[in-house]
Image 1: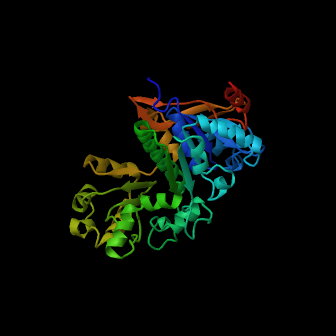
Image 2: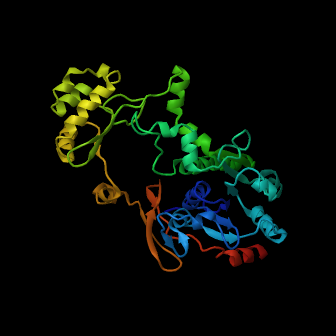
Image 3: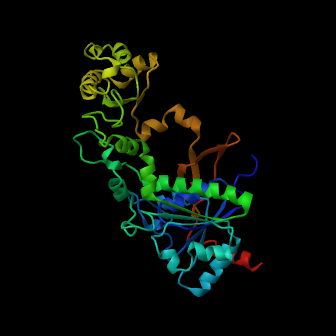
Length: 380
C-alpha cells in the first residue's frame, strides 16, 4: 500500500497507563514514529500494572498491548542533562502527548508554553482526569471513579441493581481516541497555517460527551432516566430492547415492533400490546418476554427472529466469538513476538486505508532500548 498517512511525523509520548499510550498506539499504527519517554529504572507505571498476574518479558501484558510499535527513551525530567536532550528531541518533534496530573509538566519545565518556545509548530496533547482548573482537578483520574462520578454507572444494569460500571476502562480508551481526533485536526490546521496547537481533553469530559443523549434528555425534562426492572439495555429505549435468558444462553433484542415480535415468537400474552405501549408498559412486556424466551434455546428463537428480519443476536463470550466465521474474516488478530522471543496475539488497528488493513508486528519496547540510537541521531 501507499505510505501510511502519518509517516514522517514524530510523536514524543510522555504518557503512562492507558489513556495517553492508547492515543500513541493509534498514531503509531497510522504511520507516526512514537518515542515513549520513560523514567529510568522503572519506566511507564503500566509496566508493573498486572492483569490477572500476566507478565511477559518482565512487563505487564497490558503494557505490551498498548505500547507495541513504539520506541523507548529513558530520561530523568529532574536532570538538567536529560532535559537538554529532551529539548533537542522536542525541536524535531511534531506532536507531544502527556497524561500527567496538572502541574507535573509545568514543574519539569515542559508545559505547553515552554515546549512551544522550543518548537513553535508543536501539537501538544494533554489528558487530565477532570481538567486543570476547578475543585476536581487534583482528584485521582481512575476509570472506575470517573464512571461513577459522571453518572455512567447508573445507566447499566436493571432498576433494582446497584450502580454497575462497564467491564472495561471506557474512560481511558475513549479519552485516548478523542485526543487522537484533536491531534489530527490540529495537524491539518498546521499544514494550512503553520500554527501549532494545545489540544486538551479530560476523561470526565469524554464520559460526559459519551452520555450526550442522557444528559440532553435530563436537561430537557429535568428527570433522571429510569432503568427497566429487568432486561435493561438502555434506560431511554422502550421494550423489548435488552438481554433475555433462554434455555441454554442469552439473546439480545434491539428495537423491533411489538406486534410483529409477538407474531414471530408466537406469544399470545404479548399480542395484546400495541407499539404505542412499548414504553409505558415496558416492564410488563419485558416480563412476558423473559418467561417466554426461557422455554427454548438460543437457536430456536434466533431462527424465528431472523426469518422475520428482526434485530436479534446471541450473547457471546470470547470463546464463542473467536470461533465464528464472521470474526475470522475481520482479520482483527495481530501476532507479536517480543524481543525475548515470546509470542502473543493482540488486536490490530481497526482502521483500513485504501482498503488495506493496518498491521504492525513491532513489539512494545524494552525500557530504554532506543536511547543509544536516538542520541546518535541527535548528534548527527
